Structure formats: structure tokens, C-alpha cells
Image (cartoon, rainbow, N blue to C red; front, side):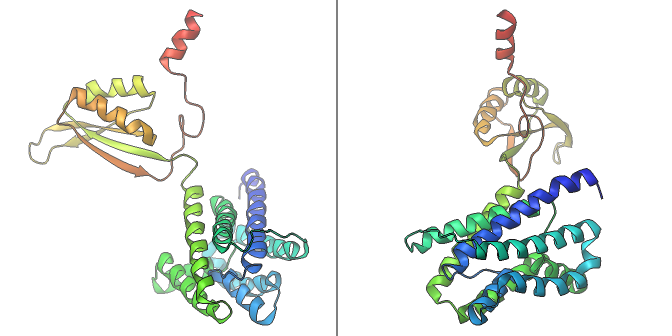
Length: 295
């Protein structure tokens, strides 16, 4: 295990579990909103038997971690243990810190905020490859032993837990809980997909060698040629592949249209992008560079 990366990842896991636990205690528990997965089970036990979620989190997760230890792998196992222990610790702490969030009993705002905090907290943990145990481990076991995809098993487990939650909440609060789950999933997607949204474009044209230099100089973006062949004509073509921000698509279409009105342009969703122009500073445009020289 890379020691430097380990020391960098652990603070994010601790921050993430702290945020998640804070929302669970001060929003979900305080307003009788349910939750999916193992966290949802701990809320059921708390509502029905007043069993502290800090302890039930450990009691449920420890056997699961022992069973799923071989499946997780060394790094993932260590991160899961740290995530589970820190989540339990923060649940214990936040229940004993006198904080009251006054949202004037507006359950919609509560649901939105609960989903936001849960998504940010879990997203930080998932971003570094960690988990907080629970249903993730169960899903991996089912996938390995029975061939059930993780997506299906996680969904089924969440539905089961939410149905069981109707033992202590009414249907109205269940609907708000579904809002929490939706916001939670969207926030996690945003965090895991990277900080910048981007689009990939495939441009098929007979004038690719003329279009590419204009794209590079105008947009200051890298361009890659992919080798293609027309299925009908059998002619070889150079296909342009370029990744840009969404706002630059119209400019690219304009440039391509000028050179080849019959060009085929396909716009793709890019879920994560790293590199110059996206995750660190883009080079200055040629106009700015010329201006500095003349000054």
C-alpha cells in the first residue's frame, strides 16, 4: 500500500464520515426521516428500541467485514475498517454535541439538506476508494457468489430497508426520504464524475486535417486523430476526437460547418476528465501571449 497516498486519503475518509454522521444525526434522526442500507437499519433499531446507531453500526458491520474481507482486498479492507470505525465514532460524538438546526419544520428543506450532506460525505469516502461497510459488502458477496450485479442488489437492499422503515415513519415522511435518496445519488455522481463536466466530440469529415489545426489554435484544446474506414466506400478517414467544455460545442460545430457542411459530428458525455484545461490551468491563449510579447 502506498504510504503517501494512504496518509492523503485517510483525512478525506474522516471528513466524509463526519459530514455523513452529522446529517444522519441532526437531520434524519431529528426529523424522523429514514435511510437506505445499513444506516437505515440502525435508524430502525434506534426508533423502535432506542439502540444507539453508533453501536449498532459497529455490531452490524463487523461481521460483514469479517465475511467479506477476502473479497474486498487489502487496501479496500483497511479503508472500509477505517470508514466504519470513524462513522461509528462520529455518530457517537454528534449525538452528544448540542446542535439544533432550525428549519422551521420544513421537511422539503430538511430532505434536500440531508441528501446533500449524505452525498458529500459518502462521495468523499468513495472518491478515495473507501466505503463505510454495510450494504456495499453484501452486494459484493452476492455478486461474487451468485452473479447478481451490485447495482441490482444495492437497489433491492435499499428498497427492503425503506419498506421496513414504515414501521416507525408514515408514508409522507417516506416520500421525503425518497427525495433524500435522489439528492444523495446525484451529489455522489457529481463528486465521483470529477469537478468539471465535459463533452467528447467525434468528427468524421473528409477535411479533418484542415479542421484539426483550427480547433487547436482557436480553442487551445488537444486533438487526436483516430483511424477510420467508411463501411460503404471503403475509403480511409481521419476521425477527430476532442474533449471540451459544454459551452464550446457550438463554436466547434461552427468551425466544422465552415469547412465541411456534410461532416458527421457525434457529441458524447464524458463522465470524468483530468488534464490540462480541466483539472489544472490551461495555457494562455495565443492572443494573450502576443499581448505580453508586445508589452
